[in-house]
Image 1 (cartoon, rainbow, N blue to C red):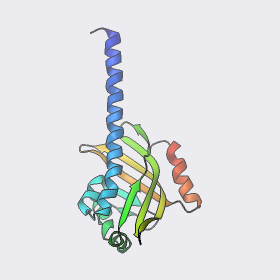
Image 2 (image 1 turned 135 degrees about the vertical axis):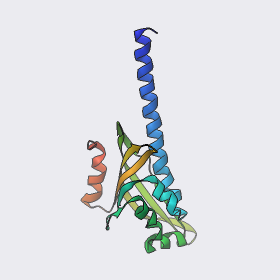
Image 3 (image 1 turned 30 degrees about the vertical axis):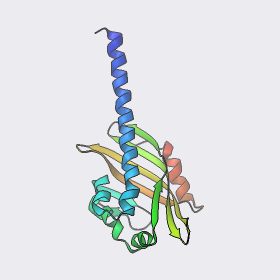
Image 4 (image 1 turned 60 degrees about the vertical axis):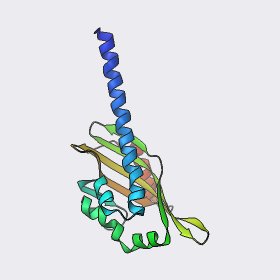
Length: 163
């Protein structure tokens, strides 16, 4: 094989791997909504790394098992009992080796009367790591888009380098 073809093939393989990684990360984020809306504790926990963290503004949940148990929180159960939908926007994804960051937004819709209302709108930063099982959430920071600086800082983190 000539040198030019080898270089082009290596570049193509790199681009395909990056696309596969981006799709895998998008799928993790996309799976979150159906998992929490269906009260699937095991499915939620499976998205997180064993020592992963979810910081939603209260006491952070630490460890995949604890994150999975968020579906048992009284506030979450109340949403599901009324009818809810967690909808996550298409994030901006940055990948560096086995680490990635996805920054975007989310909404929680609640069934009310004959329609739906947005109960929560939030800024999100997902930090992910690749391990032997593939991509997992190392941490998620979620801040309400309520006009405070906290949410804007999360959204500005789209340009913050990975650790």
